[in-house]
Length: 100
Image 1 (cartoon, rainbow, N blue to C red):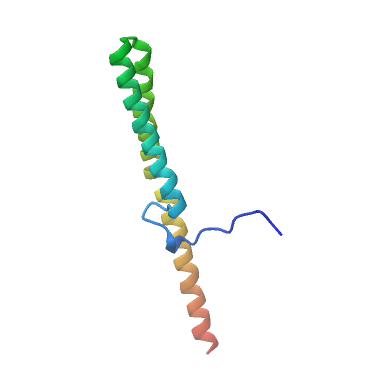
Image 2 (cartoon, one colour):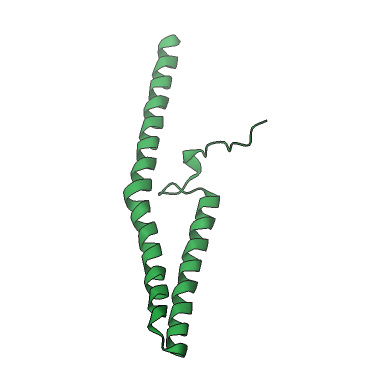
């Protein structure tokens, strides 16, 4: 018995390739980022210490990184996989027709 996860069927993903659990993780990351930004603003206002600007900056950079990864890495990868699977299905269908 193997602990490896089965690959996600691409048909069950959204347009950027996230499955249900991937979307949940993405939402949690956005929520955490919003919390860090809010905590940084509150701490900056209450204490006046400039070090809390780091919280705000990191809270802003994190979702920007996620957006860039989704756009430049994940979308092309999923598009390539979908194209390869469509080509494979077309080849399989053509092979079945010639066998008949």
